[in-house]
Image: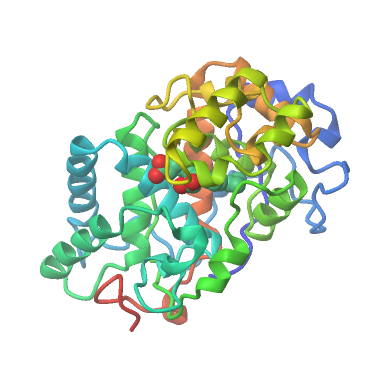
Length: 349
Ligand code: HEM
């Protein structure tokens, strides 16, 4: 159902213990300016985890009769593709996030038509479209007009994550594909790095996700790359104000001057291919590549979570990442007759 998911924290025990010591305003729910403003008071730590709550229309066994091999087919294809080209793993995770960012996970980002999301500025460096379409073609052969592109993209993002070391999480299926896709909406909704923490919290909350989800999911930037076009704006200013480590800023300035806007920079300059908590450690040293990432350390609503993830074992982050990805995959989805099952992911029905 397309409605905000219940706002409910899903925390590992260690994070829970740690957070008991954090001031109320730090978790984004007890004040602190742009904290929770949706009037939802169901945020106690004792509430049932969101992933255990039913979402109308989504079921773990949704394809068990109609397409029992669905998960195996997606997983095989993703593993093979990532085995050949590791950079596809972060790209698939990002593709999934961009799809979610515009009206929930409905495969609208996959539509290839004039004026569709795919042609937005925000989508310029997205990758992984062909792999999803290839999987869809294989699934159409096995189970005609049955598996939605939204479910394929969701499973592919999970399998890309586990392929790079994130703990496995189970999924529920039954998402339907959307019937529109608009370039202007992608450019309006998808965060691109210049946002304030207040903007990011508001964006996540409007989609049924909370501050922990924001900080944990941003940890996806522990792998993958950004272009200099995303990195350069405001870099000098950030250096002058001390918001970024001066040597790191010099390195970025040199690299981007030499390579131009299309040059790639690793999002995590220290361990770029390891899905670990280095991203948070980097933020602690002023080495966040994107301004919006670095701001999370300065803001009282997010800083405790950044510090917690940086100081604990990587597993604490990766487990929360898996939980938050599951929450993201169920927020604002279309089910039942709210959407369709496309025959080709790139073509609207
Ligand atoms: C919270 C706000 C976020 C902002 C402002 C943001 C912004 C960005 C930007 C600017 C890039 C580089 C784009 C380029 O220059 O090519 C990027 C890359 C990436 N983002 Fe985010 N992002 C956010 C959240 C997320 C989330 C929630 C996820 C996943 C759950 C994610 C996953 C990724 C990945 C994996 C990459 C690397 C992609 C690749 O290597 O192909 N991001 N992000």
